[in-house]
Image (cartoon, rainbow, N blue to C red):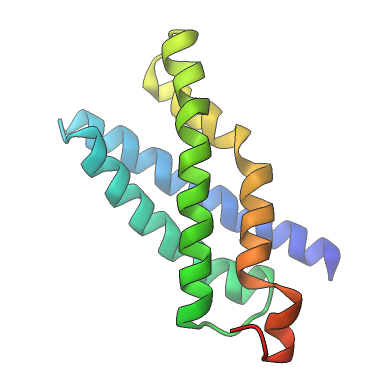
Length: 130
């Protein structure tokens, strides 16, 4: 189960990273304001990630509480990612097409911890942690 969980986590996370980066690059190309691009990317990637991790990574039922916790975790991840992307984009002067994917890879570890907390908490399996 651990190998399946890790493989599923990497697959779903990779999908979310690809969706996020594609949306950020396309919305930048289309001239959308950065905050609009972040909001669109956050919403789409959060929904994809929650459904995928719930069903495939952790085998947990979908719930509004789980979606809420996952969303809080992803907001936390975004707050962590902002200084990381600043480092790559501003401090090192990398173009966004490189800085965004590099920053995404740097945040995978924290995303795993936040995803596990949101979806596969020990209390969630007993029904007393909703």
